Length: 238
Image (cartoon, rainbow, N blue to C red; front, side):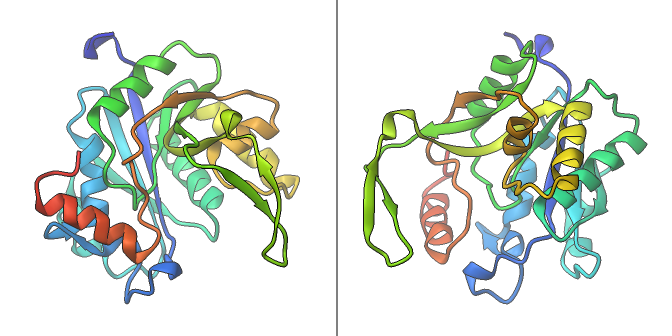
């Protein structure tokens, strides 16, 4: 599929979290990587794509860092209020897209603010693989290591069959209306939603997994940032 045949898409970046596991003085998306903040690198993954319709970044109301970034003044980037949980932020972003003129059937890609190493080839693969899909889906990677189910006491209960286990990454790509309805219904039912795909699953849909690169790393712990920084210093990580 050529770039002209790829669907137009919007992007939502939930960026209201604090990232407590990083033990840093600021939310992890504002930590430095290669002389710029992580979220700036994350936005770069999308901003120059010819099929991009626009980006909404969901920011906490008391966020002092975002207004000082150059990307905050980019006309392609709009803001929405962040929520207490990821799903609250995504819903806020979806409503903002409606205000910007997005259609119920438009594609929306939700991507982690602290996942700056999305390869262009993976983005293209996601857009091409889901262009005509009735549900949508996500980038994911098959489990590589032996998996164990561990009890509250820290002891192994069983070995899990890894052949059917995939690790969910982002972007996750769904139609605006379908995603909004699934999130709203799940929240109303007090269902635990950990990512957008889980909301669609709860609503009875089966999102499609598109295999991506394993180095599409989400910065969660200090060692994640150290690993990316080492690769960045030797040339762009991907």
